[in-house]
Image 1 (cartoon, rainbow, N blue to C red):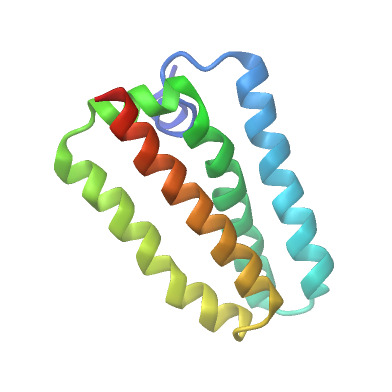
Image 2 (image 1 turned 90 degrees about the vertical axis):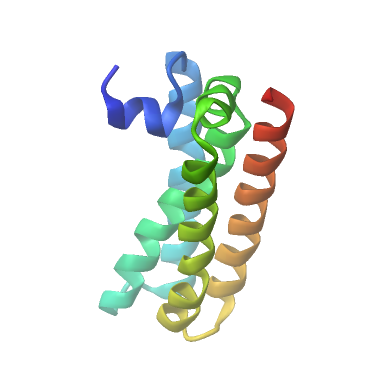
Length: 123
């Protein structure tokens, strides 16, 4: 596996796990597209955020990703959390604080909670 695929899916992700992650990401993208109408450039950036957030919820719940993150250096784990928390005000600005912001915020909260719990379980 490439370094990118290991980062996204973990070292031992099965094709089924990768498929489930991609389905979750696509569901998030469809929800954002339905809520925004996709008529502003900001909506396209929010679409990418939805892909990351909703795919990340399922990815962070998988054993392979949990093991990958747990084996990471503490600084890398903190950086992961800080980068994702820094996205929140950007998403708020892009979504103009509307329903898409709340959808993505709920997804981000789930993603980071599952991440933190998974790292703790694997250590």
